[in-house]
Length: 253
Image (cartoon, rainbow, N blue to C red; front, side, top):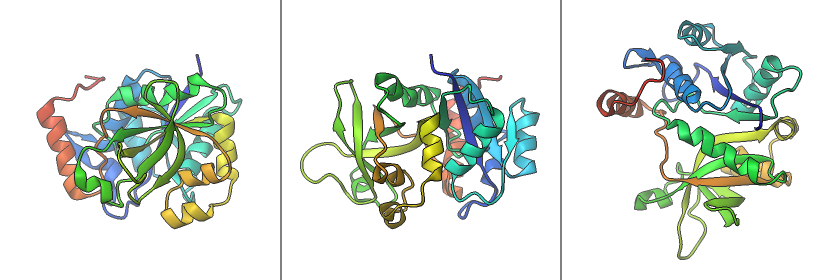
């Protein structure tokens, strides 16, 4: 079994919802909900990586692990790599999961699903998730990132060819909504953060294109649902409604 560390990068300076990691949802900060969901996946060690003393304190008060990182990271992946180096300096963990800190209603099974492509072949550098788009307007929405890939022999797995904000691929057939959860082989993460931003990454504003342009292999597990990401005050209210109304189980209660 791979030795896995799940790292949740979190910072206070969100453009559309400042301070969102500490936004209250059913009496707990959002980042604590995400940490609980990650713990419920039971894949191994889980830690929050942050440059905020407030976020770190909230996680530790809930019984979680937090690691302080530099404030000048250009991306969440850079923060995750620094955190992995601090948490596991001897490199015992061979798989690092980068889990967004704004997914308070996350199904823990999605974390496990993201690891599956790495067990299929040693050729895969990075694994991620996507779900078939069923809402028509999402097919042309540039905020819904499309994953384009070729089917593999494994059921519901694709090898990524491209990620785009455009509507792709053309023609009849399903379109897939990319879900920004990543499982990296440790060496792949180290290589990824050493690369300069790539031309297509800069153009599409999609970090994962840096890996594809460098010849790294990304495999995609197809899942049934897209988790609710909290980017705006309206999203936050939806998350509060879902958690309060749907009775999402609390692993620590």
